[in-house]
Image 1 (tube, rainbow, N blue to C red):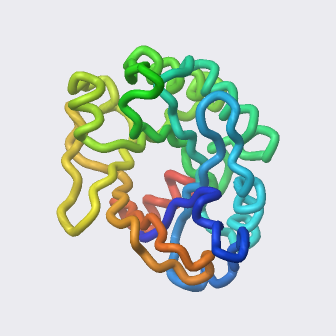
Image 2: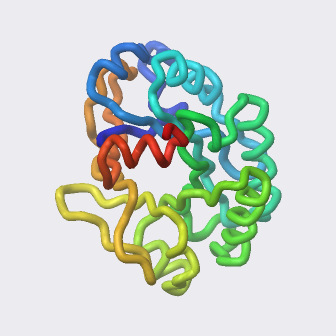
Length: 215
């Protein structure tokens, strides 16, 4: 099951921001989309609510993600993410919604190193509020090099990045992956023409629907 992930950068063109053609996306074979909602403590993605409405309009399975900043408190970042998604009417628990996702790809920022305690604080807060354990987007080398190879993320659904045709290595303590971001140069008809991040779900349509609360 193929899908893509998107942020405001994906809408930028030489002639200004361009909206997506969501019917074309849905008819082009995409099964799901993950949309960036927030970044750090204060940034809201300006396209999140519009893309959320677009995905809903064509009944495309969708989720929201937060880009984690190592220099900010994990609980506070979670509260920012939850506030933005709540105002958009998205919880990650309703029919058609994938679990919230945490994007871990920055090892250091402004002299602050990624701390497992802060990552766990984010995950705990989101799960407490939504009742759903977040998905963790990352790479195996981020966990090895920045988080000491911890096995404490192995209980979460994993969305792993590795470009090419070789599957990503599972996180320490895990045995596989749930989503794989396999390209950053994909063509997705209906988007703004930029090369897009392409993802695949490790399961069939029925499994994807179950994860998106569509039983």
